[in-house]
Image 1: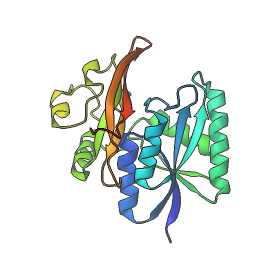
Image 2: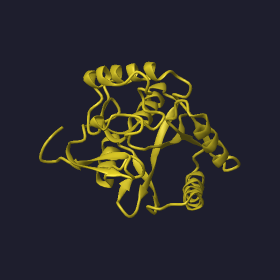
Image 3: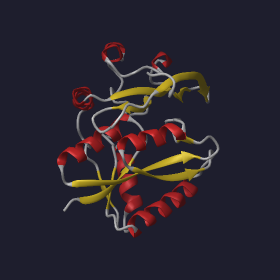
Image 4: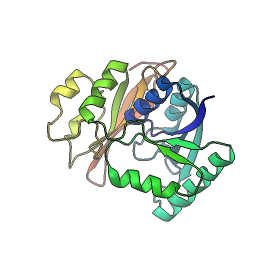
Length: 227
């Protein structure tokens, strides 16, 4: 019998690749996707993707969403309170595992493990400790398609925001930056791949700058057009 598991889902490539690993392994049944949504903007936190596109992703994946709604200026105390409520609901639904797509940021992994101590929910890290170069090759081999939604201009040229991760992206990407963006160089929106039943149609909207550092592009529902 397969174990039910919740996927911590940002809407980006790493959690999608880790989820693909679970599904191919045959041990797990994906129960749901857990995603934080910023209430004031109705967008996924950090990645800045519209909530309606998050819902399209979930529909194409055939998995229900568990949304954790947080305010735009969310303190760590409020965030932990909201997450604790979500974890409690997951456990009450009889689920004992949650997946994260972390690769090598040990402080993030340890934070998640500490947050879940004593809750009855065990974290699973399918791609933890693997080389980013290996993972990006797997990403291509599996047929995923992903677009950059946010770029940290202190780590990466803003010209990459809105780009799809493809051969040209790899050719232009600086060698001193993490190719998977694990250090916060960029965030992504995955719109197609082996775990999707259909590609998420979208168009590229306006670009903006936050805090004189982070460059965002608005990914817009593209029902009348494709990208």
